[in-house]
Amino acid sequence: MLTGILSALVGPVTDIISKTIPDKDAAAKMAHEIATLADQQAHQQVLAQLKVNAAEAASGSLFKGGWRPCCGWVCSIALAYTYILQPFLTFALLAAGVDLPPLPTLATYELLPILLGMLGLGSMRTFERYSNKIPKGK
Image 1: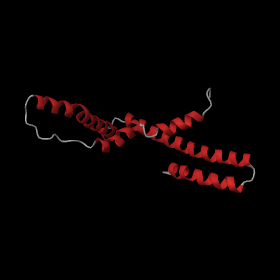
Image 2: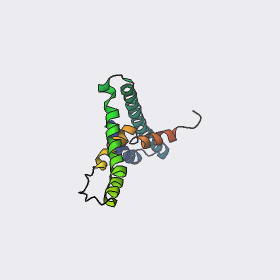
Image 3: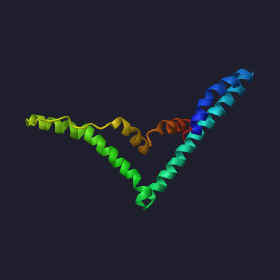
Image 4: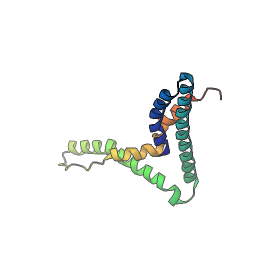
């Protein structure tokens, strides 16, 4: 949440800095430091979440470590049903001459944010942006 606030403030603060500081080099340097601070905050948030994920995965408790695999399996089964099983099953039954009522459909668009969040794909762009700023060889 703090990362979103910082990211939203970077543009307006940069505009204010460019208007109030007459030295263009100093203003650019300060604006860069503010943007870097927002990126560092986002990176720290991702690292903290990764530590929590690792601790949950290492837990022997089904209550702590079991919810993530359960959500993963539910999302995987729903996607497999929607994109593989349902189309082939419908085709096979109709080809066999079975009068088929419509099969239920699953709202996978509601499950995808959960699955992508579990896989860490939601924060990949933030990490990628941060890692591109790190000089190679360090």
